[in-house]
Amino acid sequence: MNRNLTRQLKYILILTCVIASMPAACAQEQVVINSGDWRDVYSSMMYANLRGMPASFITDAPHATALPNYLDKDPDILLVESETSPFFANYEGTLTDEGFVVSETYKSPGGAEANLHFIGELPDITNFIVLDETYGYNAISVASYAVKSRSWVLFADHENIDELSGFLDGRTVNNLLIYGRVDRQVNDSLSIYHPEIIDYGDRFDNNIAIAKKYQDISEASQIVFTNGEFIENEIMSGREPVLFIGTNVIPEQTVNYLNGSGIETGVVIGNALTDAASMITARTDMHVFIKFGQGRGGGSFSLVEALDEFPLPKYELVMSVVSVDYNQGTGGLEVVYRNDANIDIFSKSSVSVFVDGNASGVDARDGEFLTGVTQVATVGDEGAIIITKGTTSGVSYDCPELAAQESLETANIAADVYAVFGESPRSLNRLLQQTLGVGIITFVDKSSIDATEVLYTKKTERLSVTITNTGDVPCYVCPDVLLRIGGREQSYRVVDDPLYLPAGGRESPSCRIDMTDADIADNPVVPVHVSYGEREKMLGKGLDKNLPLEIATMFSTKQLFANPAILAGIAIAAIIAAAVLLMRRRKK
Image (cartoon, rainbow, N blue to C red; front, side, top):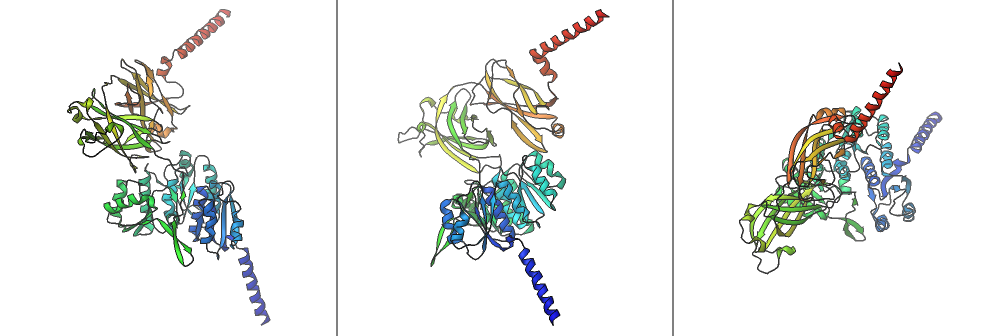
């Protein structure tokens, strides 16, 4: 009997030691995040969802003081705080004073460090998704699939890829997915894992692909809609696939996917997307609900408050129409667009032209547009055009209908511009509507140019396009090249602003492009497009030409003989060498 009792006590002692030696994290049952760094919030939410723990994040100081009222006091708290950008100071003390038990506080030195810290706490995870944190919406796109597939999302770029590769070397990697655009060094370093790559050059196409992968492992009849600009609990939960929609426009590929997906119900997150919700209902057979608030306990009744949304860094797309003129010299309607964003914008416009009929006497040239006018023409873009970041550029649309109108100089003409635009040709998810008066001008562009050479210099990693002004008038040029880099076609703008060329002048503008030997082999011929014209903001003419890609280690033969300074230097060196040789022969 004593022996059995001793054995039982021994088992109890061993069990007690095992429990006592378990990490403190096992006692933590909820996560609270106090950080202004979205990467801290994202990684902490991902960690909590993969462990099946509730998580809450702070959005500002007032929210920090209110949050304890809504938290469950029974579970211990893992508090995640930014060392540099917390919303509220000494928040552990605040929670403790409110009666909560904070079993651990993790002080995050930065979002990248927190990302690796939390995956270090999940040794059983063997699936990984790699993306560039620059594109925050990509992290939102993959979040639900990551939780459902038990994958960890890693942030990678050329600066931290060595550290990340070292981390993966010490882990079991069963599946690795590279999502969206990443630096070349990331692709190269991770190629040993034979990763799956989702990168169609468009956020909506990529998002549809990841939604399909979610459906492959867990068929869903309900989907969550968002624009990818904020973190929210439902989006991060993994309970449903997440699909992107635009604020004002639903991309065509998204509509096509929904109609063939078998998904019956959609939940739109946030009241900023109510217009998009209406469009989904109109174009699909889905039942769409809008999640615009959340219930908060408040005594005998429940308060409905705004959703907790943590904004992600994003590019603000700001586009406007500067002017609209009818050019009697060419018969074209010239529309000048302005891109005030920090990235290039792709736009596709439809322009309706109205003449007279303004019974109130208000001049449409003042920007007023009234009903009752007569529509005489509609013109627009066949495909998306590019408007370079921070620039003003114009497009001329043939408009013969205006030429048939009488007394144009005294007519009251207005243009109603309806443009969809976005960050890529297939992501035209924003809407611009603007009405302007139409001016009358007479100008005939007499410029002419030719593109003669595309040269890549390996040592400087620069690609140049040689352009000659073959006309009798000065002009402005803006060349683009289409290259296959890393197996993917990309268009490159060679100059930031239109380049001035005097009559008869020649220039070889260049831009930096990192091309490997494989890239060079993939581009024996380079399609070149040059927009040009006499007016800097109205490059109404275009030249398209396919040119062979020439390679130079420093200078090509053509560059050599075209540069008088180099020729003079070579001539002087040759004379000196000949003189030295002659003197040596005389000494002999």
